[in-house]
Amino acid sequence: MDPLFTYHSISEPAEGLYKEKGSRFIAYAFPVNNEEKIKEYLQQLRKKHFDARHHCYAFRLGADGKHYRANDDQEPAGSAGKPIHGQLLSFNVTNILLVVVRYFGGTKLGVGGLIQAYKAAAEDCLNHASINEYPIEKSIHCEFPYEKYNEVMKHLRDCQFRDHTQRIDEQCVLEGTIPLKNESSLIQKFERLSGLTYRIEEYQP
Image 1 (cartoon, rainbow, N blue to C red):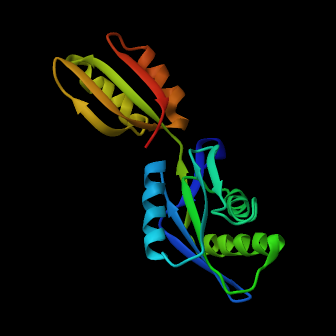
Image 2 (spheres, rainbow, N blue to C red):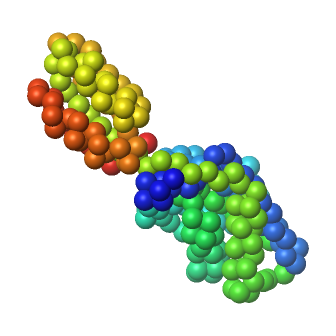
Image 3 (tube, rainbow, N blue to C red):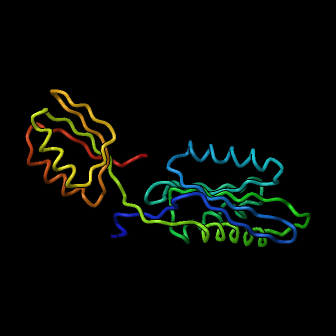
């Protein structure tokens, strides 16, 4: 696929592990589309690993991955969240949360050692993950009279429309998504139809 129209993410949760001087760094990766889901996974892990010293994480959201955050959870600044985020960049994945849970082994690792440990745990997790390519989608909303229904639907199906909601009446309303690569083609088709109003926006799952 054309990289301008696709992004990479994981298809299912994955785990990884790194050990250093008695400390255990357990890594978890989850596919996510919004911050609400991220909070849910963080709460689950904090409950599961209630006795762990740190729950450090990083996430990236959106096809371009520009919405992101890195959290050190009381480790020295830049020693945990940043190397985790660095691995998300290295593997070129987005719509993902990666958490590394640390059980302290009694020996301090120093900032350099922590950076290496969190990086290695995140890398091991992503090496065990199933990474796939997905089409970037756009959200579409259109309204039109019922007599145009078949014609509108033909154009939408030709452009790989995924129907989310619809209201079929004298005035029909359709909402769904299309792949970004088909946006210009659909606009050309729609511009030739009378009685149709529509808008195409960024897709927010």
